[in-house]
Image (cartoon, rainbow, N blue to C red):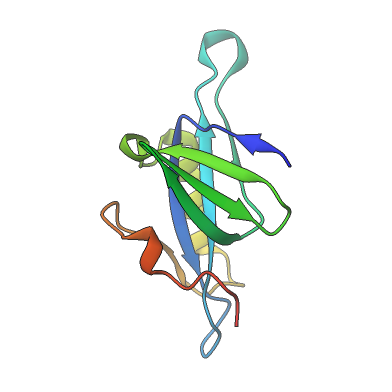
Length: 113
């Protein structure tokens, strides 16, 4: 299992057209500094979540887990660009949404229907 510890993160709710069920993904970012630059990645799709102290563990379809600190929710310049490109993608027809920071992650049914 791959474990990831992003510096910042958001959860995206994605629907691929009218009448489809949504699925959720973690969009994660890392601050690389002057020499390495920033980076980002998106998980394969959230299947479950757990909480340990101030960390949320979002498990993905690929078996990886993203350990996200609850106080680092939000977009950076890089991840905002990714988010905006997804929103503009014709495949999703404007149905990509960033979940609010105060979302109760345990109230979401992560299973794709």
